[in-house]
Image (cartoon, rainbow, N blue to C red; front, side, top):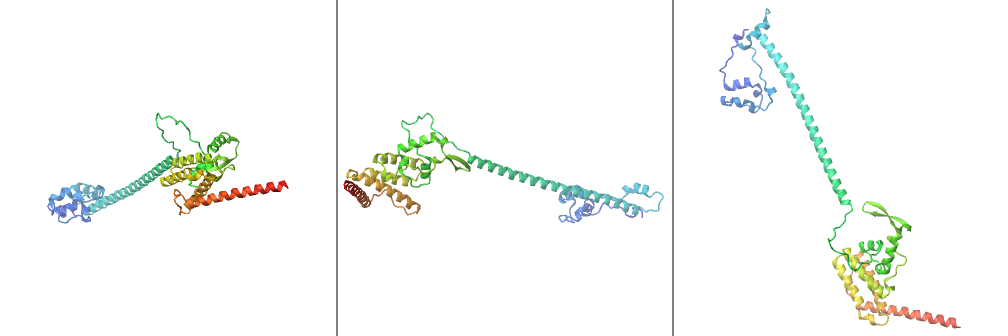
Length: 338
């Protein structure tokens, strides 16, 4: 059949011409079969398909391709319609190959984009982990406190107790006042100078294991119980004790109670009585020890409140010991004189 048998109709309705120009619109949900002529320039924006998918298939049966069809027909008996059909088929095959190649490229681009996004997320996660590790390492670094510029050292230096004593205070545990006495603090300083000859033990500092002289964190065999201290030793040691619980940030309530406790001891009129200081030392030793024990049990009393009845009982105990000692000495002299 000749191409003239199927004349081209340039005056077809507008929506039909748009569909012929953009065949994919016929399958596009957003396409309207009644698109007006004024919408023709917007045809490509109406169809979301990429350019390769809206490639226009030529009308190989039109007069434009008549010369090409004649050359293909030559001396054969092939009709113009058959040649147009073959050209359309060849074009469609080529178009399908290009669409398939484009689809593969899109899939590859999507895969590469997803891989790049995953890599970026992993790098971001690694960066966050690295920053967290740096922040944690910064926290664990040894810190040094600031100092007041142009401020001189004081006229007197506070005696420094042993590390064993400091550890006890940091743990809010009972520790004998003897450890705060000037003589004991001097021994601690001498021990530090000769620590190279001491036995070493393991201790944990932050997250590290360190070697420290055993003498620095064990109780001393020379320790004297509070009630056996001389009054002057007690008086000096309790001042150092109060100073160090303040340095180690004990609660203010506890500091005030202990300060009042010691003040009641050193200013008590019972000091003027015979063996009164010995009774007051016994009271101070036992009451403070019992206070620490009850703190652990969470039913502690107010140590600043003085119990005169308990003091009298302590005084009676001191007198009984002295009487027993005197009787023992008299009995020993009587036996030896025989």
